[in-house]
Length: 245
Image 1 (cartoon, rainbow, N blue to C red):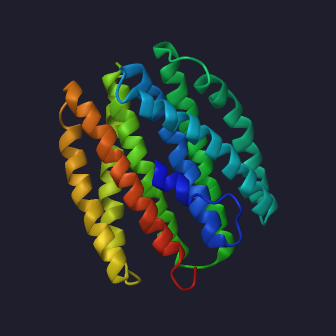
Image 2: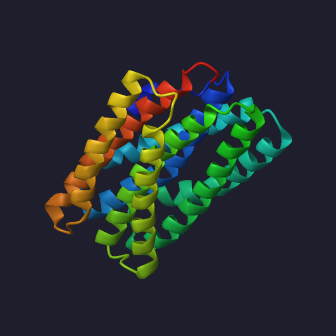
């Protein structure tokens, strides 16, 4: 995740930066459990260990930055809820992998995701800037890349129930739908269009890997989800820097 970590800012000066940062928090809720599951599956374990450690540190530092920025009582309140809900997630992730703990972590991380998404929407509404919807949508694609990979890894780890498989299909559909929305945005620059085409190509490779349960393709899912994450992070930054952001 080097590119995403390298681009992350915890000192927030604008609504567009706040949405990008809060949106990255959504992604981290899914990334942490994906990495935890990868460790249990022994899929690129050293990389997953580093991803998990770095994601936990970044989640806390970005939360502190958002709390400093928070322009309203409503945003302050949801950030306080996120901070409280983060404590049990952090405790579980800090312990060695336990398959029996995995389902609980999935539920806790999804609750953290829902509240992190609410924080994004509140910041977007407070800003009153329409272009920031693109920052939100592009940023959410980062989360979906990690959510799909997380759900796939959980399936491989044995959480193979109907509800999880339904969520996996839903997340894939949401990614494809949002990608089409972004590709038709009138604000797109030539560079953004090229980057979106690149994301589309990587997504097709990702879907091919997801369709196969063989262990070697667990590695491909890990690799392609990283590529999509980094592409979408760059695209989110491009939207953040558009005029009116």
